[in-house]
Amino acid sequence: MIYYNFDIKNLNSFNLPCKAKTFIEIDNEYDIQLLENIDFTKRTIILAGGSNSVFTNSIFDGNIIHIKNKGIKIIDQTEDDIIIEASSGEDWGEFVRYCVKQNYSGIENLAAIPGSVGASPVQNIGAYGMEVKDVFYNCLCFNPIKKEWKTYSREECNFDYRYSIFKYQETPEIIWKVRYKLSKHFKPNLSYSALASEIQRLNLEVNSPLQVCDLVTDIRNSKLPNPKELGNAGSFFKNPVISPEHFQKLKEAYPNIPNYPSDKGIKIAAGWLIEQTGYKGKQIGNVGMHSKQALVMVNYGNAQGSEIITLANKVIESIREKFQIELEIEAHLIY
Image 1 (cartoon, rainbow, N blue to C red):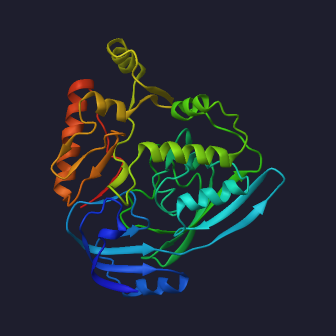
Image 2 (cartoon, one colour; image 1 turned 90 degrees about the vertical axis):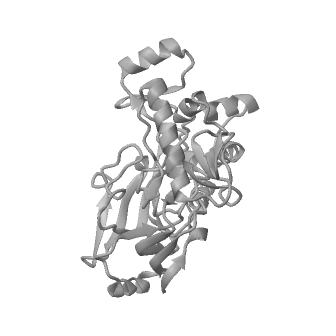
């Protein structure tokens, strides 16, 4: 279906008021022909679950393509591994739970992340020591301008920390289906401190991906606000990566600074940095950084896009002045 001046407030988890000049809802491959009636000289974005999309203006003067296709199936398997395909419109959290209930391992640490399957490779979602790129096999995409289908391999996606080639495409391609290679043998990744601490506190012996999935879900629910109750887009900022030299200077002043090894240096917990500058739980107007998780910006009601930008800039400036670290925004700001 094609709609005009369509209200998308309920289709973005930050619950920001915005109307799309043209809104196209795609449920199946037959619906793709609706795109032939769209003016692609105007700005076009792909919207799936809306969990990472922050609409900063009350009107989006362009096209929004909303993907709602469904389906999960096994493509191939061996004694050790399985390749499973999911349609982009599938809910990511439900897909993860489906896999771990079959005892397929590799994405259990990514449980309870809001959003859709199709969005998972866009910014290489990650949490609790895992990233999508670790299990990504390939994805099938449709280019609405060229009217061509293409399958992208893991290498072609050029994955990096919260990044892939799909994140900043000038003409977005529709990710239609995604395939993941999972293991039939449980290979626990329990290195992340919050997860390891919870296992130790509960004195658990972890022996299944479903158990990890449940643990991660409980931890996330205890720390992160439910978007249905308090509008948010999850982690608003990326965890910054700094040089070993910079880290050593900070560690002298802050011996307990949370840090993690990275291929490009030392990764610092952005939530901790924000907390040190006094923004954890601080509200300015209708927005603020959450009281339990400083990395999450929330909408306390009737927030406007300008308020989000103002608070983000204040937080970035405070981190820059105090730690000489430049925070990057992880959420997808749509102007």
